[in-house]
Image (cartoon, rainbow, N blue to C red; front, side):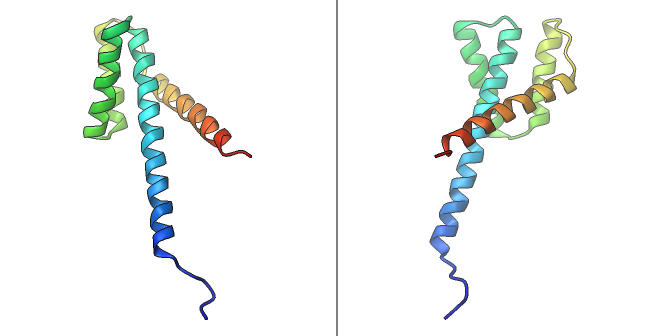
Length: 109
């Protein structure tokens, strides 16, 4: 009898769960970031919703944090809002930490 049992289906399910969780966390992060950026740009209602959707979907098509940050920086520059890349990266980190705390709190018994 083998010492360890390898159940392929449970490993695949666990991997799928991890990937799905990462996907939703990233999508949530991008939505919050786009909402923050759109708010700073003065967007409201439909314009803000379109900005958020555009940012989230463009990331889904080609996942790239740097590209998203550059887009926000360009939008801020066009609106004459002084913002550094480092400030946006710090905002992303703060959002990720907040999401992580919330997702961990769900699984506490």
